[in-house]
Every structure is written in C-alpha cells, then in structure tokens.
Image (cartoon, rainbow, N blue to C red; front, side, top):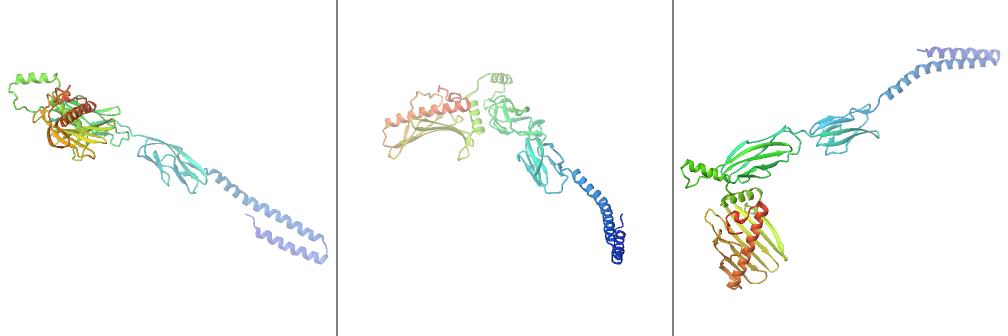
Length: 409
C-alpha cells in the first residue's frame, strides 16, 4: 500500500526549499527543478494509484459477464393436472410470464406452470425487453381399464336398472365417451346413459365400451307368471324350447316400444315420455306422436294437423291388457267459421286395415252433415294410421301389425 501522506509531505518541504533558493539566489533554474521533481512524484503516485484501482475494476467486469440470464428449463412434459416451477436465473429484475395457449397450460406471475389438457404451449418469460421460452407438452393420463357397478342383474319385465362405468385410474383424463350395446334387444335395451329396460323374458349381455376398453353385464329378465300356467314340467320345458325360436308376440313388441319411448323419448308437460315426427303437405302441417303413460301402462296415439282454414286431431288410447278394442276420437274445427265436430268410433284393433270404413258417433257438432262427418273422420283416421305406422318404422323398426293391429298391412 503506497504511503501518500509521506509523498505529499516530501513535495511540500521540497517546494519550500526551492522557493528559498529562488528568492535568495534569484536563480530561475531552481523553479524548473521544483516542477520537475513534482511531476516525477505525481507520475509515481498516479501509477501506484492506477495499479491498485484497475485490477478491482477488471474483476467487476468479469463477474457481470459470467452472470448469464436464462430459464431453468427450456422443455417440459406434464400430465394433465400436474405442475412445474419455472425460474429465471442470473437476474433479480422483474419477470413477466405468459402462456401461448391457456387451455393447454397456464402460468402464474411467479412462474408456476399447470397442465390443463392435452396439447402444446409455449411459456414465455420477459425480462428487460428480452424473452426466454420453455416448450410445454401436456399428455393425458391414460385409461387402463373400465368396469361396471354390476356384472350381472336380474329384472322383472318392464323394470329398469342403471349401469355405471368405473374408470381405472380414477383420475384418467381421456374422453369418457361410453358406447352401450345390448346383445339381444328383444330381451332388454340400453340407452346412451346406461339405463337398461327389461322388455321380455330371456338373457342379454350389456356391453360398455370406452375407446378399446370394454366391460360387460349379464341381464336376466324373468318370465312373468301366467295364471293358467301348467304344473307339467315336461310341458314347461317344451314351451321354453319353442320360445327361443318363435317370432315375438304383439305383447313382446309392445314392451319393446314402451322401452324405446322410456329410454329415448322426450318428456311432455305431464311428465310422460313420447316420440313424434312432423310432416307437411300442400302448406298443411302434420304431427304424429305416441305417448307412453307409464303410470297406467297405456299408450296414447296422437295425430294433429293445422292449416290456414282448419285444425283437426285424432286421439286414440291403446291398452291391450284390457282388450283389443280401441276408440279413436276425432275433433275438427274451422278457423273463423262456426263449423266443427267431435266424434268417436270403436272397433277391434286386430281387424282394422287401411281400407276399412268405421262408423263415428257424433258427440257434438255444428254445420256438418252426417255424411260429411263420416267421410272426413274416416279420411283422417286413415291418415293417422299411416302416420303412426311411419313413426314406428322410423323410430323402432316395428309396424302397427307387430304391436297388435295384426290386419293393418
């Protein structure tokens, strides 16, 4: 360490000595000597000071260059729901974070990245105008297997049962789109939510499928006991063998229709399920529908038409548990004219065909003759049956002849 105090003291004494010589002797050369010595000493002092200061400055510059700003990660792979922490190294300045796709991955103000759904996103950290990025890949948590809440179930006819899918692992993030299949829709059918409806006696396998994973449940529908069932075991065995090969009965088809409506139908204002179709012809709009009144185990067939001149409707209840008789009721009203009627017919459902003419009893009417009522009502009855038959075919593949209107071909 240079002793600057001694140097300065030396200069001061030397300056006084030289001044005395200048004043006493009057010699100019002594001034030059004083300046020369001062310059030499000053140069020595500057050199020493520089040598002591410069190394420390050089060291400081070297440290700054070594502190490179960067992210702790430039790539990251995460599973949905998982997180990782990103950090900017080499600086203490403020960092702002941004995700290129927040649906895939989000980032907090402190750099915490959370995976949201399968895909890719770029996380950007911005410091003093410069950007640093990390590529994030998000993967789904794979589905290993599925199972059902029941592997077998026994139902009575017209009973329902809800099957539910269980996933392994439970936190899987794959799309849980379940496809349901019944191996025998004559016995039981299943809707898109796993609701099973027992139609007729027998066995079927309900399969749930998610991707390439499957789970199965065996459904057994019990035979309803018959009042006149025989106690003869051999006769019973023969009947059971015949049941496996014979065609479905109208009663069995009716059960299938009811099951279809329960599972796939819409709900009306009374809380009952129904199916319908709409059509139009020559500016007239038509609606045909079938309602299943489950509380009474009864079907209601409805036909409704509207034009700019009149409205008409056909309403018929079907309950073959009470017999084969049906009583369609017809209503006709004209727009802005005091003309209309309400009439009802009764006939055997098993004998009616599209060419038949039945008699309608007038309940109330005005402005129409008896012949007019019969002609119009029968024409609308034929149109109603045609619409109901088309509705059945489109929705269930059944026809009116399959559910008890055996003569309607």
